[in-house]
Image 1: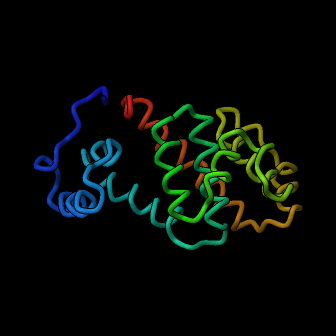
Image 2: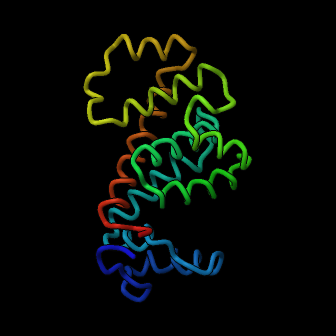
Length: 176
């Protein structure tokens, strides 16, 4: 139960209501994060665009890498609701139960290339409050593994998105 009263369907902006009804038809319920974001139409659509652009659209990073970032950062930020949501999204995007469980055990348990593991470790480091200590040499090390600047930028943007959404979920007590 969230720490604040979340809007019900009838209290939402008509544009958001339309989307909510589609979700209700498919799943039978609205998640708390949807309701929280529905407080502000502008913030709802900004966040929805981030999800579509970064996570659901085919991009330069494979879906598995993007979902590993989602799971690892959400776990790192102690956001159980986001971890649960992304376990389901990861399955929907083609990850196996085994791949999801490996990810949740930590980077060293993931069956992936050493290059991908280094990228994931870098994302975790970038998610921390002391990320200002990251240096040009740190960036060059990741680029030296074969990642492009664009791929690294995408990975860090996904990391930043999860810091944002995990903060909202944690601060407002979603899933508690």
